[in-house]
Image (cartoon, rainbow, N blue to C red; front, side, top):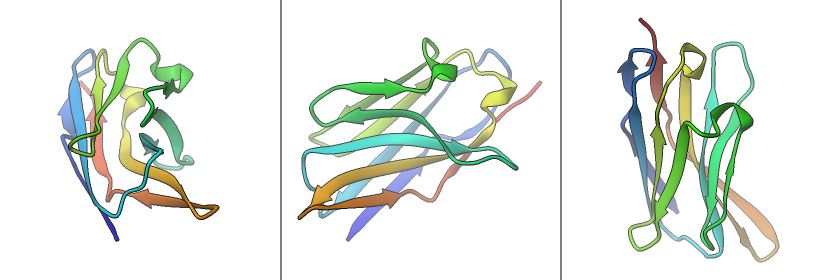
Length: 119
């Protein structure tokens, strides 16, 4: 079993910053990828940023230069630092964990945290 606890969402004005965190516990295998997805009303869930346990990161073009994903492997926690937030960043943000277990990709999701960017 894997448990994922997100925190850090909220309301912020355009240009502001927020930091999301996701603490993961349970049976976690390495190598793995931890990251963040988001889903705005009426839209599909999309990848925001991810970080592999080996250190490489990946970002959606829309957030490059503004968001930073990082992880603490000792604490099994992943962070998303969001700067220069825009109204179009408004969405529910979901923490995600992926790893391969005996040839099957295991995919776990957090409960989601709302981020609202508005003046």
